[in-house]
Image (cartoon, rainbow, N blue to C red; front, side):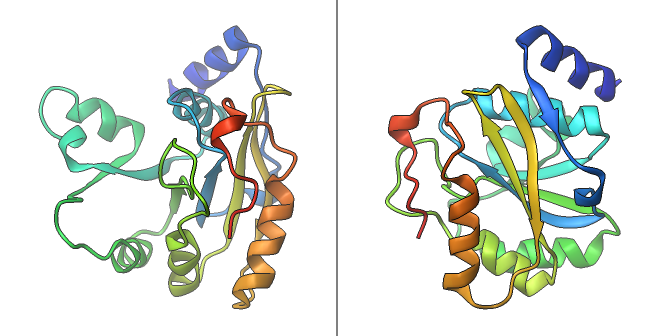
Length: 184
């Protein structure tokens, strides 16, 4: 059902997807960028569903409870209590150890607002869990969403972040004024 729903959403909105088979791995941290709109989740989920990828993502714990809890869990949400000083890097690393398959979507900016630089949790999660980073993207100018590359981090933060930054520099955000192309 999700596969059909994903195709339907992309069709009625005029979006296309690009997710090469060689980037479909059992475990990875999936960057979701640029992230400047609530619409980003709809298009990202449509691509994952169309491609048969069961991705997961962190969300405020309150959204996984009550009336809408079932819906967000169905989408792949993992609730986290942000009021406590939790170490999401350790938690995510533990999740990778507990699952045979886990595609963990991370909006590296951490918010839809403009930021000076990206949060680096995704980098530390991928390094600690020893999984690759998939460069998920939403290009609103081209109406194209998908995965543009799959990289294994070298451990050289500056080098790796330069590769990632170069990939995203020509991707058009929904709200370009909220996206900073200098990610580190």
